[in-house]
Image (tube, rainbow, N blue to C red; front, top):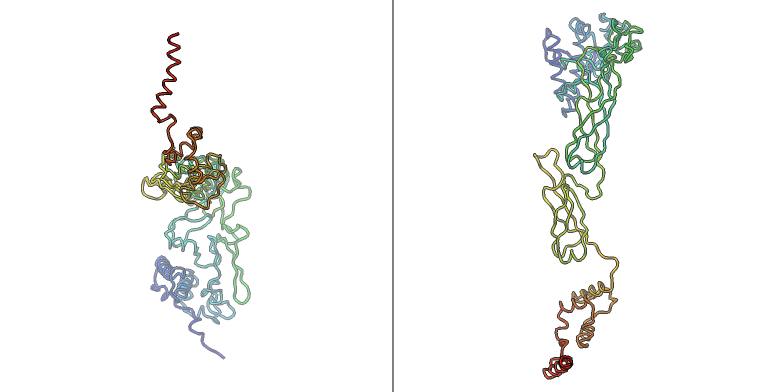
Amino acid sequence: SFHSTATKYGTKNPYAVLGVDKNASASDIKKAYYSLAKKYHPDTNKDPNAKERFSDAQSAYELLSDPNKKEAWDQYGAAAFDQGAGFDPSNGGGPGPGGPSWGDQGGFGGFGGFASSGRGGSFGADINFEDLFGAFTGGSRRGRGSRQSPFQQEEILVGQNIEVQTNISFMDAAKGTNKDIYITPLSTCKACDGNGLKKGQKRSECKKCNGTGTRVHFMQAGFQMASSCDTCNGSGIIVPRGGECNSCGGQGVFRERKTVNIDIPGGVEDGMRLRVSGEGDAPATGTASNPNAQTARGDLYVFIRVSADSKFSRSGADVLYSASIPLTTAALGGEIKVPTLDGEVKLKVATGTATGDKVTLSGMGMPKIGGRRNATGDLRVEFKVAMPKYLTASQRTILEMLADELGDKNAKRIMNVSTSDISAASSSSTASHRNEGFLKSAWHKLTHQHDNLGSDTPTDQATGKEDRSQEEEPKKAAGSA
């Protein structure tokens, strides 16, 4: 039984979809499609109907950009494209039985397929989606081998980027440095000026694909498949046999060794990447479909690896340093010298400093990349108290006495110094006090433990007189003699 095609499967009026008049020029149709594609692209428009509107705009532009399909629509309307009409616009014929309908030629309302390369595959409108997305983001440069699109006024062939790695020291990263980078980029052939041909030779259009670079194969049930032309390898042009340039082999480019001096700014971190514009490969214009197109070299990307330093480490723009101080300096306080990026400076140590305490020296770190002018980080010094592993008898005696003074009952005692020993020592003779060691004597003076001991000379005045008289008698005898 006969039935009408469902509305949602019927071909929509392309003029109404794009919002243009039937007499609109090709330029107006392109502008209308570009506006709708940008507005309803699913990646930028989250509306549930955006995908359908985007697909409708694609289908409408594909139809109106093909002269045969546009003529068929103007003459027969939707009947020439809906299922069952049997019309094949690509053959230039009208509706008839047995012909493949445009509505059956693939997804998105009649697309024969997409191609990621610049040739566009079997996409009738010859749209490169890289150009469409580039137009969304304001891009103006084209990849190697791509061709001009409705969204670009001028074709530019761009070479590949080059990536290299260089190593620098920690101090070079802090102060900045210059380095020579050795690369072997592709450069334009001087013998053929980049066209890849010998003098007097010219390219010709490929007869197999009529210069399109694509061949369409029709299959059963109205399907078609597009593939790159195997004669011209998708370029659409043929180079005469033996006409290639001998210097570059028809590529239009050759490898050459080159030295590039780069300026590494101070403050770079390990893993950062520097871009040097225009120092990459030149495009292979000899194999391009349009060797006379404007060209641009790729870029050079330099990955920075910063070597570790024996003194410093870093956290962003801040420089970290661990200062080891003696136990006595940590307890009593003092002053030490610490290294910086610009030399040594003196740093005061507060009384009672413990391991893990930190001091910040402002403005003595790394330069801040991307910050305000002359902005730098800080130098953060972390103290580490050095504890002695081995003690002499005098050192242990002093520490044990200090533990007694501080009331530390947990400390281990070996020298057996206690308050009872101090009391016994205070009642000892003057001779034993005089023969004690220097450290003990200094400690006793500080603690005033021997203040009650008598002086070394007798205090009795009479005894003193007798002693002095006994000492003077020999002197007198010696004088009289």
